[in-house]
Length: 362
Image (cartoon, rainbow, N blue to C red):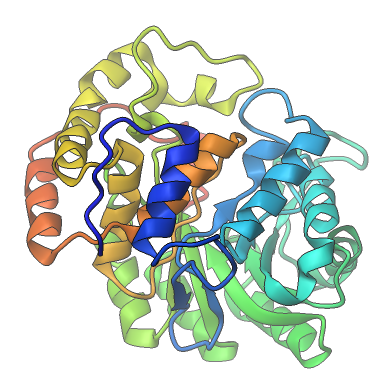
């Protein structure tokens, strides 16, 4: 990779650097490195785009026209992997992604998710789990319509529903695949044994879970299972919901409609203690003449060739910065050094409230 010589980067200069690292010239769909999710044959860009925050979760939704432009800019930069879910909004994020990507349908991979439902019809907050086969058969039609597609490339169960055997869930998606409505099956925040049971019924193409330098639990049991079974891994929140970028401090306050306001890890005392992770990334970033966010992403990319992080953003400059991480190659020694240093830092604050944490790792 050509040396990166700039030390202070503007939104524009990250693209100049990325072009130089990829051999110069205008960025196109051919510039972004590709990865295959396990042995599924599903090829995607090395870095995807998590779309949730454009419509939901991080404060007020973004301006629709601006978000459409952002999604289309991602395509220009070579991003081919886009992640959404029916619960984001709810429903509106799928509509946004569908409208923005309609002109590029043959060049992108769209992943969406099922498995949440409102407690009562018409209720805005979807907090119930529902992975009954009849529910899956019903909601897939809405996702197809909102995404403006004939087939969903990757269909995840959003959270494991303890009231429905995972074999029944996998069987329902298997039928959708046979009917041509879905191409690949995925799981989100599932435990190793659940992954094995689902995979025995319908091959799982990818598992999505939170994974970053300050949340490494998937390394214990999930990643070894995925490697054994030939399943891809899609880390969401690879930048620690923004914290690992270094853009936050103990003075940062979150709006009531920003779900980070409810997360123990984003309390001021916890953020102060967890600043050690940002400091670690910043030190490596200075050595590599990159940013903390790029090192956080490059660390994930360097771990396994079947790992594809999906950082989210609502800002063009951040999108371009994140894409630049695809051209930063960390050596095995770099990775080991980062992990040794990280292992000496004790994470402060739970990542979720207890009610949400109970939905993970099943």
